[in-house]
Each structure stands twice: as structure tokens, then as C-alpha cells.
Amino acid sequence: MSLDHHMMNSSTLPTSHPPEHHHSTAALEHSHGTGMMMMAMTFHFSYENVPLLFSGLTINTPGEMAGAFVAVFFLAMFYEGLKIARECLLRKSQVSIRYNSMPVPGPNGTILMETHKTVGQQMLSFPHLLQTVLHIIQVVVSYFLMLIFMTYNGYLCIAVAAGAGMGYFFFSWKKAVVVDITEHCH
Image (cartoon, rainbow, N blue to C red):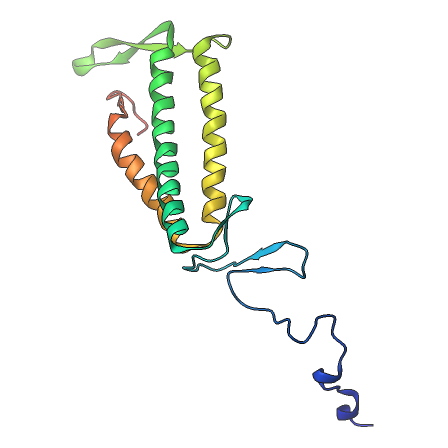
């Protein structure tokens, strides 16, 4: 018997799908009538059948994609603003705990006293509770943005990146950076 006798023509094999059912390489497709959708795993620029975070929220028109772009853009801006707002609130709510002084060598063999202020927050306080709630919101928004990016939709990915960039531009200039000139490990 030759190998040809063991090979079967694929048209003679039984199939579990009707002949008119074809698998497409589109961004999304229904999976065997179960209502589940499969997502594309490569970047694409489509505006049809693009799921957005929730099963009932699907983009199907250019107008819906434009609206989603704007919403995602502002969500990413909000995320960047929230990060900076938390830093500002933390600085305002810190309380002085103690001052530490230590001798440091100065010019010409002199000894200078350097003072460091240690600051902190009380655990059972309104500012710490507010920071905790804002942290939870920040984590949820960051995961939403990650999941939106993982749709691999080019428009939505651009919205995330552009919104984060614009948010950083608008909010981060308020971020005060204190540099200790006596710090030896920069």
C-alpha cells in the first residue's frame, strides 16, 4: 500500500460545521454560536465589532469609534491627573515626625551639622483614607486602560497613548521635585 491510499481528500472528511460557515480573519468573530467573541491578537485599524471593556459595549460605526477615542483619551488624561493629584495630597497631608541632625565634613576641615526632617502620615486619618480610595480608583483606571490597549485596536491604542501624554503635559508641571544638593547618590 502506498502513502497515497492512506491520504484522504479533505472534502471527504466529515465536518462539524455547515459548508456555508467559514472562519474569517476579521478582528472579531462569533465562536460556534455560543456568543463568545475572539479578539485579534495583532494591531488593526478597524471600527467594526470592537469590544470595549464590557460585553454589551461594542463599537460598530466610525462615529462610535470617534466617541470611544475621545472617551479613552480623557480617561487616560484623568489617570495622569489622578497620579499627580495623589502626590500633591500626600505632600499636603504629611506631618513632621522628627528632625535628625548629623555632622558632615565642611570646607577647610570644618564640621557642619546637616538636619533632615522625617515626615509621615497617620494611618487612621482622613488624608490616609482619601489616599486609599484614590489609590483604588487609580488601580482600576490603570487596568481599564491596559485592557483597552489589549484590544489591539490602533485607534484605541493611540487614544490611550495620546491621552496619557496630554495628561502628563497638563498636570506634571505642577509636580515639585525637591533635590537635596548634599545627597551623594543621585
